[in-house]
Length: 175
Image 1 (tube, rainbow, N blue to C red):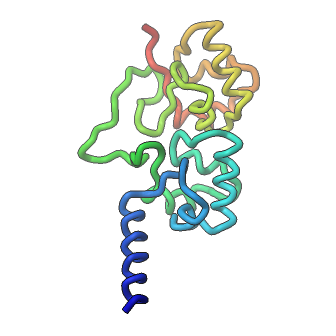
Image 2 (tube, helix red, strand yellow):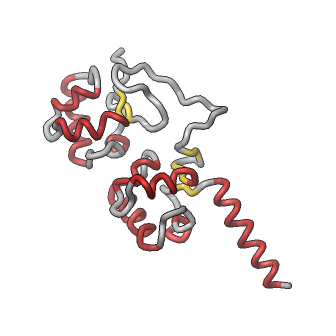
Image 3 (cartoon, rainbow, N blue to C red):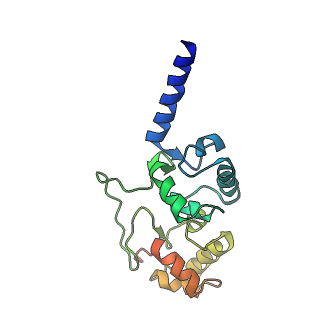
């Protein structure tokens, strides 16, 4: 009888965490392995990346972790959350906040280069800590970016990097 009770407790805890999602910014290695496509080694890589680079701005940033590509990310995203339990997938009943943009339309998966912190900028593909600081320094010296295309004015960002960044980039209109 005790075994059956223990089994059901564990079962319901697993179901509850699957329904609520796994916060990749606070989850333990054990909790991360409940994500589809994430084994113990990948869970440790996610934690190591998080400790080295700060919290994930979105679940899409998981592709920066070695071993997680687009296919694995597609498996993870339905169960993945960041922050206060908010899913990174848009909810049909809750529209994403709208921002004025002169480049890509803003949505839950874009980073506004005119307002983002260094850790938020690191969510952009190809942007590490040094490049994030260069983007902020350029923004402070020259004012807000007119569009994401202007990122090529930042030392270290060329056409190839810009092509990776543009799908997740937005530039709010200067006030």
